[in-house]
Length: 67
Image 1 (tube, helix red, strand yellow):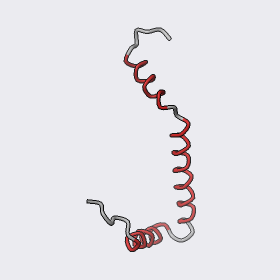
Image 2: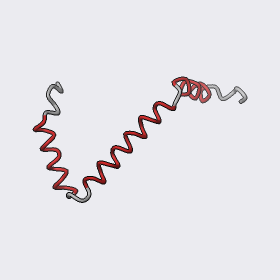
Image 3: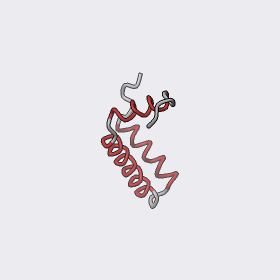
């Protein structure tokens, strides 16, 4: 269904539309912000231990237990 979704021509059209909407001065700032956001998301996913979400869900399910 999504075969060939991001071909070079598609990416060029997306870039040109973004350039028309945001302008040449704002586009590098948006790219930098997007890159920093993706980097922070990846770091946050690495820092979170996989068992943390399981313990948090069991604590909310058992309000009787004392912490």
